[in-house]
Length: 389
Image (cartoon, rainbow, N blue to C red; front, side):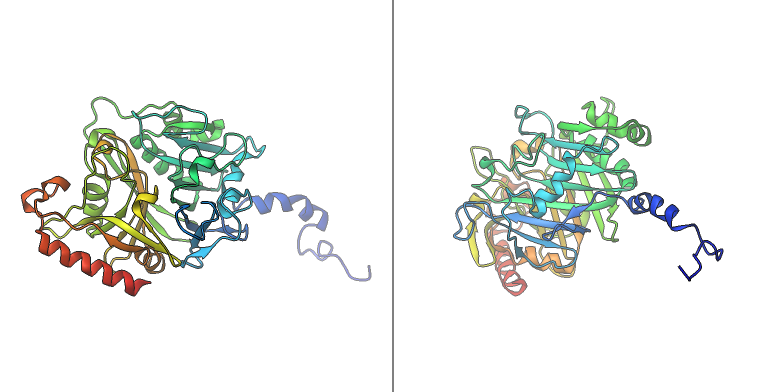
């Protein structure tokens, strides 16, 4: 070449050295993150699998998706059982041959483990390298597959919820503490020594050790910031807390009223909507709508909450149902304030359960609002929900 090389001009290393270092330079930022509809990395996403009860559900395989770049629902072109879907591509990162990464799948009802009714009622997936990774919180029993991405046929019938956050690896200390408090049940794990040394709490989680018998605090909160700068508030409760995750911990700490969608089927004793004179009310969602598809909460196994008003646009995704049996189970929630995703979830609520005239059933007791007051609140929810849509 007639042109002098950069190296000969004293401006930098030779091209051969740069090519040698390129693979190292490209991994410094971290390999693992949530993946979007196009397979590219995203900061966070929320997804909602539709129930078979709606006409456009594709046999319960269709799901809608929203993320940090576009917080409005989009219908995924790929079904949820496709490994190239947003959820499939995200989870599939757990099945590589990289023995240097930290991998954890936990579930009270995993694909290869018996149902555990003693430990936490919680499901999730984590994959991290030394710099970054993702935490996926979901509601699907028997999911995902142990050695490859599999969405179980048992998960098609009912609606299901997903929330994925891409975070720096430093957050594993806080995430590990949350998983210890909720008594998560690992069914697949890989903990390299460097992670166990850096985050000893992860060894505690994998060993299924929990709080000491002398413990007096049974809740944990943590602030987690995504790589893109979005702040999430993580809540966890131990089974000894013996209170409702949504009303007594999340709503009380956030200082907002919530509409809460959880599984209320079966023979369990539901807690019902909880209205109180302090203005912190929790309403059970009864009817939903997503992109023109209407369905009942009885067709929905998802677990999430949305605040009542845009002045505090809070959205949470979590583990526990509002049933009395779950007061004795560990579980948690991830919450964020975001006007865009709030409008999406607020517009999903069609109706909520009003508080009954004899309010003791929901935990509000004698200080709860009467039927007339709670009906006014329900009408307000319906009006605001219409505006949000």
